[in-house]
Image 1 (cartoon, one colour):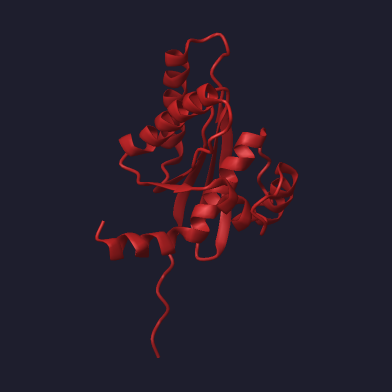
Image 2 (image 1 turned 120 degrees about the vertical axis):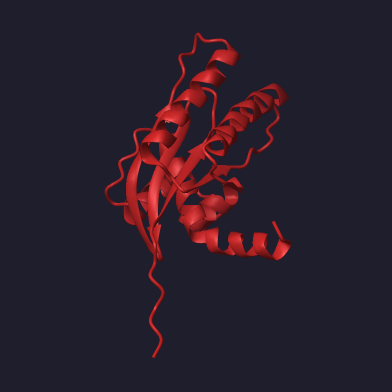
Length: 175
């Protein structure tokens, strides 16, 4: 008889980037078990210049990364909307959100918004209320203070469910 491998818990941060509010959520995943660790958002003041807002996002995420020490990170991919300027600004916030974990030596996985919704709710076009209901089931101790923090937890959950497959794909690709 062979013994089962010991499952080591992995701490994951999910990040939902935005210029006004960048949500973050930290969970631990051990096999199929998910444990809520913390969540919140980085909210730069509205009167700051773009460069100062981006700096505030970086500093806020760096503080969260330093406090919670996640081993893996996940971020939502940007969807392109009709307003090109807004999409470009969101892309800049997303770039900072990708940079912060990278500076801590943490690989960052990316997930499409529909993949996050499908993983957490079971439907790719779920609304924020449905995500909130499923978060209460999957992480009963979590009480996200904003929709952005809830989305970040959903991104972390998505990574917890897909991380093994992604690692295998990268190994096969030789990365």
